[in-house]
Amino acid sequence: LAFVEKIGMPKFSDAKNKKVLIVGNSHGNDTFHLFYLNKELFKSYDFSIINVHVACFYDFLKRKSNNDLPLYCKQVFANKDYQLVEKLFLKSDLIILSTKWFDKDIEKLDNLIKKLKRENKKVYLLNNALEVNTKIRRGFHILDFFVLNNNRLPLDKELNEIEKQTFKQLKNTKKINKILKKIAKDNDIRILLKEDYLCNFEKKTCEVFTDNNKKISWDYAHYTLDGAKYL
Image (cartoon, rainbow, N blue to C red):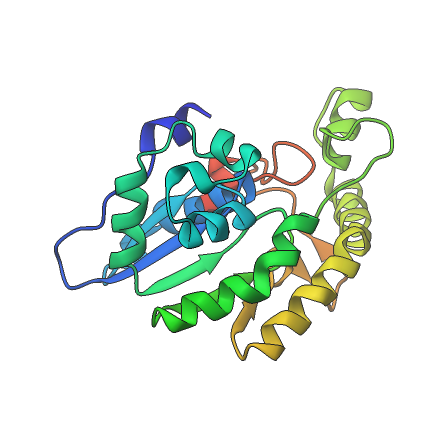
């Protein structure tokens, strides 16, 4: 959280780099960190983020005054610089919608995409992140329970089993990701699948450690900074 607050909403540079704006809640922050922490790999791009629900971003764009925002969106935007949000949107070339998708986001997504296209923005979607549901404590990953129960890191064979169990958790977001794929197809935009850079579908495993044995996820779905840089 301290890192998120420190970075805030970075302003785009004056360079002729492609301006990429990421929109979404805490899962959008994860996507932003993937690029921001590896920006040496994307030297011709600038990245920024508007850390709000996708539904609220749509309401923000179509408002006639700031008072037009629904109450829950006013709360989301409470500590945001409205003028900076406007500037980031106007200067952006590509908008990546990456969030933990809620019903309100899905309801407004089609209209949002159409509005962004009318504004000549290129739009990408990211699907819902893999969410681990241990049915015991939501904030814990399968890896966390192993370490707590055994007071050590898993051996290679044990790690492989944890990775297989994690792969099975993809079913938790299968329904909503199917809806997102259809919306992307109907609007002729690209959808990026988060499991493609986290999981091996041939081996039916999903990684839980970086190559330096740092945790990729710090809870049921969110990436650690080490995890984001690694992915």
